[in-house]
Length: 231
View 1 (spheres, rainbow, N blue to C red):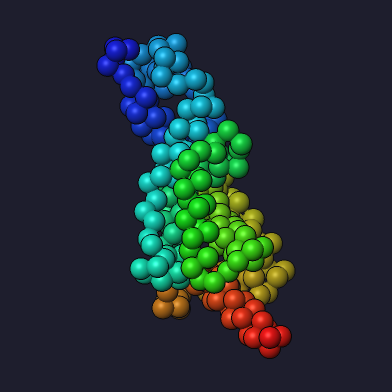
View 2 (spheres, helix red, strand yellow; view 1 turned 60 degrees about the vertical axis):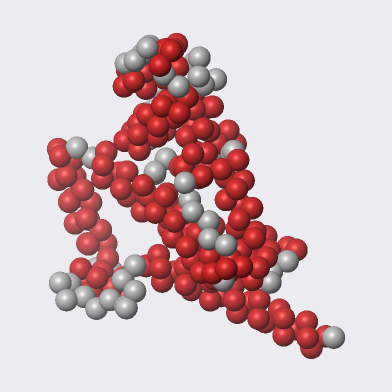
C-alpha cells in the first residue's frame, strides 16, 4: 500500500485488529507496517508513535459504545446497557483494560463515556461525592468482570496445542487442592455437573450488574429517607 493511499483511519483499524490478536506486547510499528504492506517509517507520517497509536485505537473502541438517554429509557436501563456493552467490549478487545489504566490511552472517547456515566446517575438522583461513588461502583464491577474473562480468553488464545496438557495438569492439581475445602469442592462439582441447576439469568455478569444496581438504588432510597427525617 503506497504512502499516499494510506490514511490514519486505516492504520488504526489495522492496529485494533493486531491488538486483538497479539495484545499490547505484540503491537509494533514494524509488524503493523508489514500487515499493511508498508515500511514502519511510513506509519509515522500518520501517527506520532506507538503510544499515540494505542490512544487512537482505544479512543475508537470507547466511541463505539452506544449511549442510551437515561431521561428516555430510565437510569437503570441506561446503566444496565452501558455496563453490558462495556463488558462485551472489554472481552472482545482484551488489551483495552491495560491501555485504559495507562495515562497515554485517555482520549475524548473515554471522556464521552465518563460524562455519560455521570448523566445516568445524576438522573437517578445522586449528587456530589455520592455521584462519583455511584459511577465508580458500576465501572469497577464491570472492569473486574471483563478483566477476568478477557484475561482467560487471551490466555486460551495464546496457548498452543502443545500446552493443552499443561492446562489439564493445572486443573488436576486444583481439584486435589479443593479436596481440603469442602464448600469449594462441592460448588466446583455442582457447576461441572451435566444437569447443573442455574438461575433464570445464566449470565453471572447480568446477575452481578443487577445486584450492584439494586444496591445503588437502595442506597439512594436510604439517603432520601434520611434527608426527609432531618428536615
